[in-house]
Image 1 (cartoon, helix red, strand yellow):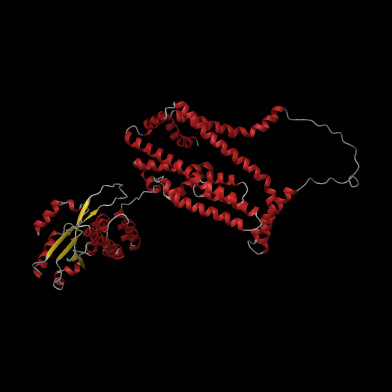
Image 2 (image 1 turned 135 degrees about the vertical axis):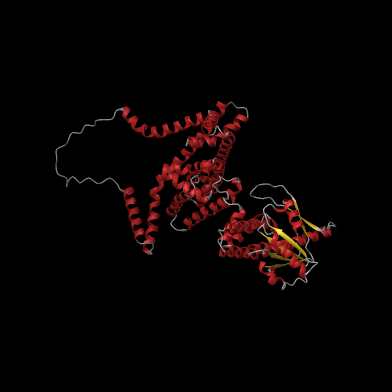
Length: 571
């Protein structure tokens, strides 16, 4: 607890020091302010709880009436019967008066017994009985305050000792890990406090408007319990819902109270939290649940409250220490697979639907040719590498190719939309007198790298050009050729597709090349130059003036100028 409070108060101490306040004064002022706020919070909660306890007997009649109504309607069965019995017994205990003594006529006659009142408790014992229950919580609170003060006073010294202990051989990595952990935990606590306050204010006002007693108490509890992931908001809503059941004779107040919590929770979770957090804690939702279960099992309620900050520190440790990288992989929220590897895994599993979802998500920030060149083609290259290593059989190769072809077909609508946008841009440029023969496409920011640098890639205008795109040696080459054809269609070309089987010696003579201006043949295997040369010769025999382009796909792209020149020389 002291460590968590130190993380929370440290930014305030740093801010006061920047204002010129000495360290000791800044630490004492920050700690005093924090614990004064906690004390005020506890006092208000205690006052509200005391007021609620006094009014409990008033609510028992409404609760009992509703339970009996449910029982009469046949709802709940044995549960309602047991609940009704419990409530009746509670009411009897509350309303029970002192038992009547037997009357004088009934009581047997006995001689008076002399009574002497003797006080067995000394003043010190009475004081001990009053103060004793308070010693444990007060001593714990005092110990926490002292530890927080000394940790804030010696923060730099503790940091240096920790670095010397665990990371003296790599100061850069250790410093980066400490800064990352401190930033994430501090930001989590601050943003969680802000979000909880924004959540608690409408809850308090709404409960007050609805007429729920002690609305301030439930608002404060909602603020505090929301620090507990997932479970806290549910517990914070159950008590007001039970009170709404007890206060009003009907059911409408219960429904309105439930609607209030649901609406505020939805707005907070889906609008306010994403807007305020910005940089997340780095934990996946599943990791938060697993961490809550583990730390609760280990330390009880305190572990449940501290589960998220502690797990954040473990994830940071895994991010910067190779031996603990598995922690970042298991609990982190960063993608563990590169986009092209993730796409290839979906193609390999024969799941083109999820692959399409992945592609459409990326196309929100990228153009089609960027997705194909940076993600889809590298994914097919992984398949070609598996084929060369002998770990992919013919059936798996066909499955990957079929899934890729389905992906291309599913992206036809996106390609058509992008082509229409290209036409609109060209029309706008023509109206402004700035028409160009080439379309300049600006690279959009890559979300993964975070780089926002813009580079221009010139794509030729394909209007009026008929192109035949074909695979070179297999089904995977056909899939890559289909992607190329779709990009050319976006640029205005009339693109046709052919399979690698259509370019075999026995089938090539049946190709209709009369209306084709250019043939583009793609190979995922870069060792296919000899095979490509034979294909060029055959096509030239059929149509001597035909232009033939050979593409050897690679992740290097157009930067491999030497390889391109060597390939051109062999042709």
